[in-house]
Image: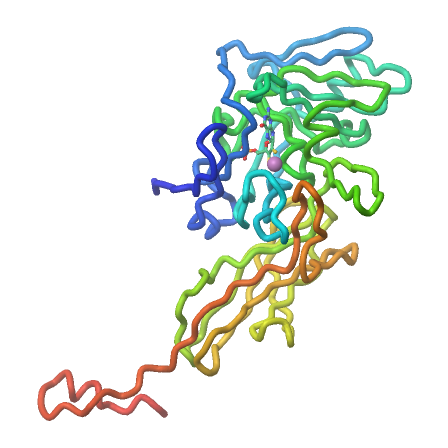
Length: 365
Ligand SMILES: Nc1nc2c(c(=O)[nH]1)N[C@H]1C(S)=C(S)[C@@H](COP(=O)(O)O)O[C@H]1N2
Ligand SMILES: [Mo]
């Protein structure tokens, strides 16, 4: 099994980006997936239970009991809303995520809706509040709410498996909420308590952070919600050197919080001209799709390669993401600058020897 090295942005709490080699596969191995924490991992006793607080009853479930309920698997992109923050100018405060706080994983669990309905929803319930077991350095619980309709959506799961195995502790095991199609903050790890409420939930992780804030523009804060349309470039590393005339398949992943990706365009001239990439098969309602374009770099020099995704609702990645005070949702067009060097010139003629003879074989046809 490969040893994945995540890029660590902070040790305490542990925040780290996905190990880049893991982007080679459609599903991100759990050990390579980014980690986003606001405090230390809580202790996980073996009898971990999640409580659903209804009007009629407050059932509790451990993993074994959840396994007896109807199960569903979802392949989904998990992306931190702060992914790409370092690309905003000026850079907002917070963890300076590059582009790799994202991955695509398969969760398995039981839909939350029936659990909430069976426990009994209060008349006029508008949201459900989810509490994790972890506390941040200020002693605040990690709590976040969802609009009731999203909490009741058949794909919103109380999950106990990730990539076919029990959810690793660092990813919120043994029991985690998963909200496919929404930024990672909605998917509360170490889930302890679910309670429907009739008034908007106010809490640090709901109304003070993980909100789009543009007070200068007189806009009210809005909690981050669905993923924005976005793509990454996997096949090229920054400042990598390519050889003029030698084919290269430019490829990466594209995802959206809308229903599906519609197209991905690629530019190899810094955004002057764009070509449609091939978009690979759909592997799940919330999974990312591979895109690729065959390219033969021309003249030597620096080349800015860019990728731009559009979803079926007509949302396109903007040239740069919409800046906001806390630095969320940067889905500006991704780019990577590479070097193209000239094809190796034929070396000075050698007088004798097999090797020299081989080298002199004309390559052009
Ligand atoms: N209990 C709890 N749940 C949490 C968090 C947290 O700090 N505590 N971080 C959230 C954020 S902001 C993200 S992006 C995802 C990250 O999930 P991962 O660490 O499994 O990649 O978990 C979310 N759920
Ligand atoms: Mo996040």
